[in-house]
Image 1 (cartoon, each protein chain N blue to C red):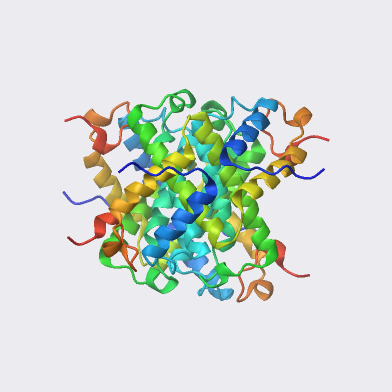
Image 2 (tube, rainbow over the protein chains, first blue to last red; image 1 turned 30 degrees about the vertical axis):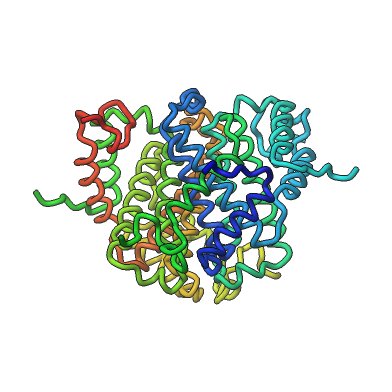
Length: 122
Length: 122
Length: 122
Length: 122
C-alpha cells in the first residue's frame, strides 16, 4: 500500500488529529506537553550536527540525512498538532512574522551580518 | 498594505529563501546553524508554558497566546528554511513518519497510554 | 575497582578535561559545540517527563529515575566542560546570579506566584 | 554588601532551596517544570553562539561572555534544584557517568573522532 501523500499543511493537521484521536491521546496533548515534545524533537534534530563543522553539516551521509529527515518530520508533526490545539494557523502566523521581520531587519541594515534587530546602530 | 497571505508551505519556503537571499544570510544558514536556531525558537515556545499547570496551558491569556503564535511562526520558518537547504520535502517527510508511527503505535497497543513503542509488552 | 568519587565541581572539571584530552577531543570542544551538546542533553532530560502529570513527575519508577540521573550527569559534565573552556567559574557565576535574582524577585513581590520580574506591577 | 561566595555545589543546593522556599515556589518546582526550565535556559545559552563560526565562539566579546556566564549560572541553578528535588547527588551521578563513558569510549577507539559509541566498528 503506497504511503498516502499530503498535499497541504491542513491535510497534515487533520491526519495528525485523527491519529491522536484514534489512540485517545488527547488528554496527553495539552499545549504544555506538546511544546515540550516539540522541543525534545528539535534537540534530536540538533544532535546529528553537534560535532560537525559547518561544511560537514552541508554534506551529510545518507544515513544521517535520513535521520535528520525523520526529525524534521517529528518537529513538523508536533508543531502542527500544537497549533491545531491552540487554534492557530501556522502559515498565517509565519506570514505575519515575516512581515514583522521585514520591518525589524531592513535590507540596508541587515545585509551580510547576523546582528539582532536590537543590536543595530542608529 | 495588507500582509500577503501564504497559501502553502511551498510558498513559505520560497518567501523565506528570498528573505535570506536579500540579506545575504546564506553563509549563516548552514544546516548546523539552522538546526540550532530552530531549537532555540522551540525553547522560546516552551518558555511561556514552563510554570503553568496542564489546565492553564490550555487557556492562555491573549498576550501569551500571541507570544506563542509568534514562536510557532519562528519554528515553522526555521524548519522550512532548514528543509529547503537540505532539499527535504517536509510534508512528505511527515507523511512517511506518520506511516512509520502507525506501524509503531498500533491502536490496540497505544490506546490510552503514552508508552514509547519500545516499551510495549509483547 | 570502585568508582572514584568526586568531592567538588573543580575535581569534576579536571577529570572531564583529562577525559577529553586523552581522546584528542579538544578540537570538537568549541564553546559553540559544547553549548549545543549541553542543550541536547537538557532535552534528553526533559524527555522522560513530557507526557507525565506534575504529580507523576515526582514519583518516577526506578528505571526512569536512573535515566534521569544519567541525563543530569550529562548536563553537568557538558556544563562543567563549557565553563572550563570559557574560563568561567560556574559556582561564582551562580552565586552572582542568585544575588541578581534576589533583587529581581523580592520576596514580597514574588511570593506564591511565577511572574517574571518584568511582569510585576509597580 | 559583598556577594557571598559559594564553596561547593552542596552550598549552592541549600541556597537555591532557601531561595525557593522563601518565595513559596515549591509548588512550581515539580521535576517536570524544573526540567523544562533547565532546557529553556540551555537554549538561551545556545542562542549567543548560533550564528558564530567555531572560531568566533572561542573569542566572545565581553558583553556576550557575560551573557553566557549568566546562562551557565541559570543552567547550574536549575540543575541543582532539580537534583535536590529528586534527591540525586549530581557530582556522584557525574562520576558514575564518566566511568560508564570511559568504558563506552576507550581511548584507542575514540581517539580523534566524534563517533558515538554505537558507531564504532568492531
